[in-house]
Length: 336
Image 1 (cartoon, rainbow, N blue to C red):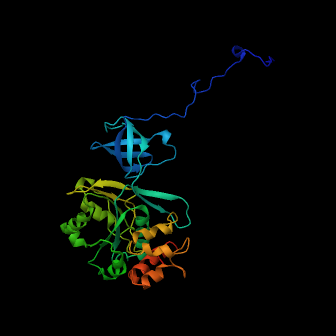
Image 2: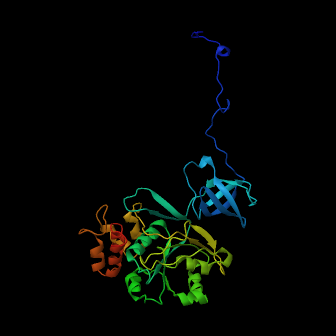
Image 3: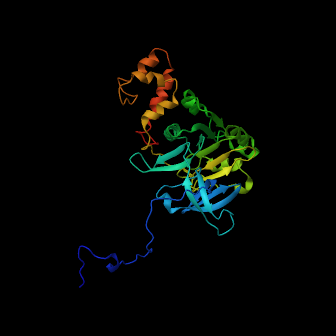
């Protein structure tokens, strides 16, 4: 066996080439200065359909992005084949900074948050007034997620031909949330879509609601006929809808500039990711009163300064009740 001394000649040392050759590794990544900007429309099993210069392009995430995932609504930079032709594939090399994020967890004990939609301006919370019955706790949780993620909420109440909206309007009246009340006949005539479209023009709006409330039916009325999605019916025994929408999809609004994002029906909306201290930002009339609160105040404890602030007439007591109801929704399940 040959042995080497302290002063060996480099030529005497045998170097075994690696599988990838002898090219040295580097941390320098290409800047992709010529990458083209696009918007993610939908994600399906690792393939992302993006809108690039008015055409749809199928792409995959570049390895250099690591575990960073792109979601519907993301603005991304793409390279490669951007023709959009069949069997072509581009690469997403960069995900631009997000202006807003709608997130949820499977439940309140799940530490893994799921980003549903990025860069949306508005969250349309769709609820039926009957068949199935409205679930205020789920609505509250969606409101908290909207406020936390930087989205403006819009409450859409469907099936007003089956039940009046008075009770829900009374419950959410103090929150000053824009709302639209529609029924099946108005949807068929197009009147309902026109009234909803007024709130969507020029904005990216994510639609969320549990199965069977008519969310996808409403979305179909707002987009071009060739882009409509399959809808289902409410189970007569369980009172629940069937999941017909299995993935989020961004669709252009018909008759006005803007986008609607149809999301799968939800039966739970976990808020494990939400910092309760950020919910107060949705209550500008109450926020100044928190200056006297103790550190890490939950705004629902004996020493909370908001009680005195409201008692002095600075804000409506109903607004404080609404704030505390939303904060408490993190501790209660939707069906409670």
